[in-house]
Length: 270
Length: 240
Image (cartoon, rainbow over all chains, first blue to last red; front, side, top):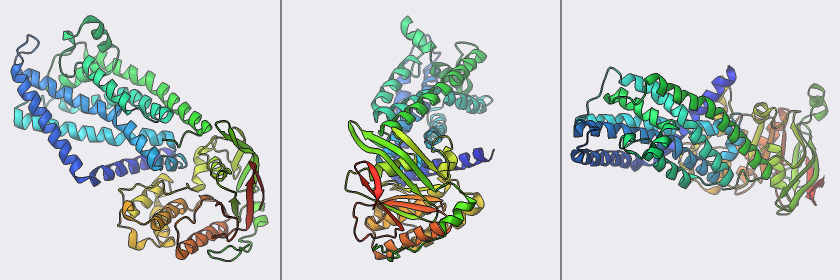
C-alpha cells in the first residue's frame, strides 16, 4: 500500500512536470486553442454540404464529427504524444534519472502517458464548449457524465497501443512517424469523420477488430445521442477485453524491451 | 594523494570496521563484471568492493570503461557477465530498495529539465526518489543549502552556466541522502567553491556510513577527496 502511495506521488510529480513544461511555452496552448477553433469551424461548414440518408440534418453530422474529433484528441494523446515525450526524455538524459529512481523506468513510462491524456480531456471539454456555444451542438446532459468512465475505459483500451509505441521508441529510438501513420489509419477505419457503414466490407472488418470504433460509438451516443451500432454492453465488453488482454501483454513487452536495451547498452542511446 | 576539495587527503571518514559489524555487506560490490560495446570488450571481469565510510576514486584513460562500470553499478546497464550488489541488494531483484539507497550523477550535463526552475528540478528529484513526505521539505532545503543554490532557485535551468547546472545535478544526486553515491566526473565545470561543496557532501555521506565512488580520467591532482584509488586497466580494476 505504501509503495502505491509513493508511486502515485511520483506519478503526480511527473504529471506536474509535464504540465509545467507545456505551459512554459506560453503560445503553445493558445495556438492549440486556435487550431481547435479552426477545425471546428471547418467541419461546421463542411457539415452544411452533407445531405445523406445516414444523417437527418447537417447539424446531426456536425455533432457526429465533433465527437469524432474529440476521440481523435484522446487517440493522439495515447498514441503519438507519449512516444514524443519518451524520446525527449532519452535525448535530455532524464530517462536515466527515471531508471535509477525507486519509481522505476516502467512506471515512469506509464506515468508519461497521464499528462497527455488529461490534457486531451481538457481539450475535449473546450471543444464541446466551443461547438455548443458557437455552432449550436446540443448535448444530452443526462448522459454526458457517463462519458468520463467510458473515456477512462477507452483510454485503458487504447493504452496498450500507446505502450507498444513507447516500446518501439525504446528499441528503435523513433516511433513517432509510425504512430502518426497508425492514427491516420485508425481515424479512417473507426469512423471518426463518417459512419463506418460507408466503408467497403473489408475495411468494415478492420473497424470491428479494434477498440476505437466502440469507444467513438459510445461517446457519440452519450454526448449527442447518435444510435449505437451494437448494444452498449457489447461495446463496453469489447473495450474491456482489449484492455484486459492487451495491457498485460504490452507491459510485458515493454519490460522485456527495457531489459534487452539495458543488457545491450542501447538504453541511453537516442 | 593530493586530493583537494575539501582539498586534503581523506582521513578515515568513519570506522569501516564498526559499520561492517552492524551491516556486514559492503556498500558496493562488483564481481567479475564484463561488458562489451559491439565487438569491443570494455570490461573483462572487473572486481571492485567499496566499503562503508569510503570515498573511492576510479581512474583510467578515455574509453577505459569508467562510465560503463558506473552505469553497471547504478543498474542502468546489465553486465554481460558478473554480479553487482549494493548493501547485498541485487539491482534487479531488489530494484526499488536498490535505487532508494543509490545516488547517481550521470556524465555530462544531462538529466535536467531545461524549462523548469532549479527549485522545480530539485523538488522533482526528491519526489522521484520517493523521500518520505515528512522529510521532503527538509531534504529539498538541505540540497539547496548544501550546494548553495539559494540565489538560483527561481531561475530556469537552461539559463544557468555549466558550473551552476552541475551544482543542481549534484544536489539532485545527493537529495535523498543515499547510502551509496556514484558520481561520473563530478568536478566538471565546477569552481573551487563548487568543488569544496561536493567534497563536503562526499564526506558527509561517509559519516552517515555511506560510500562514494567517483571517476575521472586524470590520475594526478585529484580535484576531490579519495580515500581509495583504483584504475581500470585492460578492462579490470587495479589498485591506483
